[in-house]
Image (cartoon, rainbow, N blue to C red; front, side):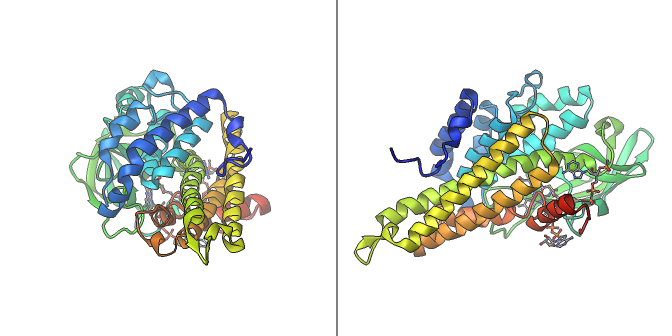
Length: 387
Ligand code: TGC
Ligand code: FAD
């Protein structure tokens, strides 16, 4: 029997019944609700906000957090599969879920008070409260330790001033998780976006992640009570701990984009007749397709082991860096190669590779650029920081 082209090593057989059910549910949603509209959304630079209630109903927001907060309580592998299937649709949709789940709900859960958890998490799981995560600043995102945004204590309040750049969901959000320097190190604040002095401005002219909202945030004497501070973490390890969760999801997501591009190129190559034979019958195209299958298979095995380590409580940030680097790279290369196999047709959004390739230019940059992750591995193996 022929092997399934996008799962040559039967990695799916290594999943539990529950994990397979999660993957199938999200896959159906993507096929039926996302793929028919996403090309147009990308062209129109429109985030499909109408899908958020369905995403929430499926339990995809904060899916790994406990049920007592209205979340699905799924394991890490299931979260990975959710990211993979959503990104098979579009990186923008996966971004929305990554930010809400790993960058906003996770810090409230991990660093917040019980009161903050009760106040925000159930509404966020229902998609009624949308969050954004403000770490990056205009002067350079790779080095967040050099943060300029600061919060000053004033009686029982904090007064926050500064600016954040490239913030996913910024103009959709009801709350922003804002990281700021204080006299006591970097701290996180839950800032309602209707607080006086807070403004969000959409970033226009993007050629990537066009079906996602990206914003600049400005904080001008934004005053919040101490009860909005996340009290259980101080220092850069607070935001970096959130990034480990989000980057983990991003190790899985680009596999979905790669599978979408590879599948489209494979089908096209079998039907495109040139020189009296399908281009799939040429050695040059077969080698390209075989190379895509090889790299997808490696990526699938890498993330499954990473997910099993995560679920066993043993996952290390450097392992996440290696998988984020590898899987963004393979997906971007596959998307560009698939675009080539489609010839001129590949430059339109009638086919997915150009959209995925453009999106993946962001995915390989955000949550730590490829170089940052390479240097994390370099530091891990040499013991010397070369940043
Ligand atoms: P360094 O000295 O390495 O670490 C400072 C403290 O943090 C701890 N730590 C981590 N903790 C958890 N997870 C990690 N991945 C961690 N990495 C480090 C570390 O143990 C230390 O703790 P302590 O207790 O000793 O203080 O810090 P560094 O200044 O040398 O920085 C290292 C570097 C360059 C790796 C870091 O700054 C970095 O990762 N830079 C990249 C920044 C980044 O990824 N920004 C992403 C912004 S958010 C985003 O892009 C969202 S897009 C979402 C979407 O739309 O999907
Ligand atoms: P820089 O840090 O200025 O890097 C420029 C170049 O220098 C890169 O090639 C980098 O690899 C290289 N470089 C950096 N340091 C070194 C070094 N030591 N040695 C060699 N080369 C180096 N941020 C958030 O906080 N929240 C969000 O929701 C969010 N969403 C995003 C959405 C999109 C669409 C995009 C594009 C970005 C988003 N970001 C977000 C920001 C993202 O995390 C940053 O773009 C990223 O961390 C890189 O920062 P930078 O763009 O300032 O590039």
